[in-house]
Length: 229
Length: 404
Image (cartoon, rainbow over all chains, first blue to last red; front, side, top):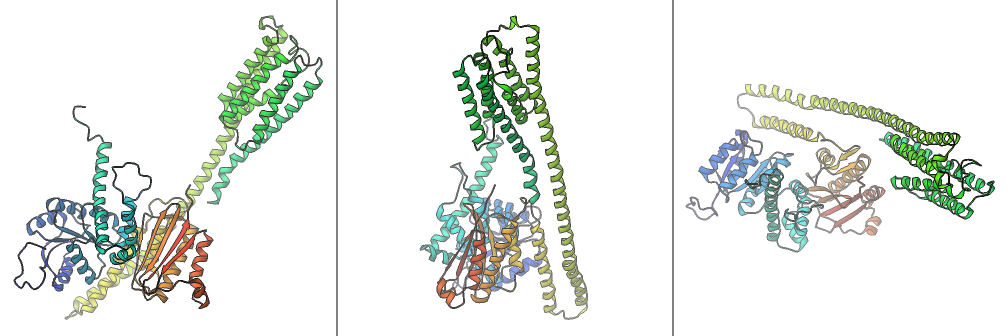
C-alpha cells in the first residue's frame, strides 16, 4: 500500500500512482485513458525520454513506472537502473514492442519487475499493472525462454556464478511453455505464492548475474588490482 | 553441401593409395629377404639371428598392415628403428669381412622404403632425416662386420658413398613430391570452396531482392494508401473515428510485419543449419486463423534445414489440430536444446481429452497425432502427449541432434 495522499472515500483500495515513460505522446495518452478509465490508477507523471524519467520519478514519487525501452537520451534499461538505485521501492513494468527481448532482458537485469508487450489489450495491461503493484513478477513466455538461455549453461565451473536451482529451472520452463502461475502451482503441487517466490528469486538471480558479469569483466581487465602492485 | 565431403576425401584417398603401395613394396622386399637368406652363398654367418631379425620384420609389418589406425608419428619412429636395426644387423649376420663384397645385402631393398614413408608422411626435411639416419647405420654396419672404415678400398668407399646419396635422395625426393601434391590438392579445395561460397553469396543476394520486392508490394502500397486516405479524411468535417481506426490498424499491421522482417535477418548461421526459433516465429505469424500463438525459445535452436522442415510441419499439424478440435484461447510453442535433443512443446488451454491411443484409433480420431508421430519417428525422435479432459493438451516433440 502507498503512503501517499489517501482518498477520502476509503471504501476502495488506494489508487496506484503511475508514471508513464514513452516518447510518443499519442501512446502515453492512450495508456493514461486506459488506466484512469479503470479507476484503479492515477497517472501522476509522464516522461518522454530516459533523462526526464529519472528526474520526474524523483519529484513525483510514483508507485509504479510503465517504461518503454527505445527512448532518446537515456534508454529504458539504463533509466530503470538509475531509478531503482535512487528509489528501490518503486516498481517498474516494461512495456515494449515485440522483438526487443534482448533489451527487455537488460531492463530486467536492471531491476524491472515485469514485462508486457505493447500489443497487449487494455484489460491485460491493467491486470499486469495491478499484479506488479501487488509484488507479483509479470513474465511472458518469450522472456522466460531468454532468461533460461542466460542462466542455464551446463558447462559452468565457477561456483560464484549464480545459476538456477532445478526447481527454478522447472518453473521457468513451464512459464516458457505458456503455463500460468496457477497452472504451474497445480502441476507441481505447490501454492501459487511459492511459484511467485520462485519467479521472484529468478529475477534476483538475473540481477546478481549481471553484477557477477561486471565483476568478472573488471577482473579480466585488471581493474581490481591494488594500486601498489 | 554434397561437394564438401568429396573435396575433403580427395587427398585422403591419395594417401590411402600411397599407403597400400608402400605395404605391397614392404611385403615384396620381405619375401625377397627370405629367398636370399635361404639361398645365400656362402650361407648366413649367424643364421638364427638372421631368421629372428626377419621374423621381427614380419611381425612389425604385420602390425603396420592390420592395425586399424593409419601410420602416425610413433609408427614412423618405430619403423625407422626397425629398419636401422636390420641394416646394422646385416653387419653381424653376414660372414665377417664379406659385407658388400659377396652377394646382395641382407636387407635387400627393404631399407629404401623407410625414407620413402617418412618423406611421404612428413615432407622433405623429415624424409632427409630418415635417409641420413639409415645412411649412418649403413656406414656403421661395415666396422660391425669387421671392416674398419680406414681400411676400405676406393671401390668400397665409392659403393658406400653411392648408397648414402641414394638414401638421402629418396627421402628428399619423395618428401618434396608429396608436399607438392598436398599443396596442389589444398589449392584445388580452396578454389572449390570459394566457388561454393560465391554461389551462397549469390543466393543471399537473391533473398535480399526478394525482401525488397516484398517491402515494395506490401509496405509501400499500404503507406501510399494511408497517405491518400489521410488527406481525404482531413477534408471531411466530422472525421469518422472508424476511418481513423482503420488507418491506424493498417499502419500497425505493417509496423509488425516490418519489425519481424528486420528481426528475421539471420545473424551468421552455421552452414546448412537454420534457426528453429525464427521458423516458429514466422509460423506463428502466418498460420491460418487460430488462437493467438506465443513462441518462446532458449537461444536460436539450430537444426539442419531438412530436419527443421519436418519439425515445422509437425508443429503446424499440432497447431491445426488445436485450432480444429480443442476450443482453446491460447497456444504456446516452446523450443530448446537439451542433452543432445531439440525439444519442442505445443501447448493449448483447450478442453483436452482422454489420451488412449487404442480408443482414439477406434474412433478414427488418431489421424493427425499418428501423422505427427510418424514424422518425428522418421527423424528418430519421439512424441509425448500430456492431456486430460478439461486440462488442455501438451505435445512434446523430441528430436536428436548431432553436433560436430
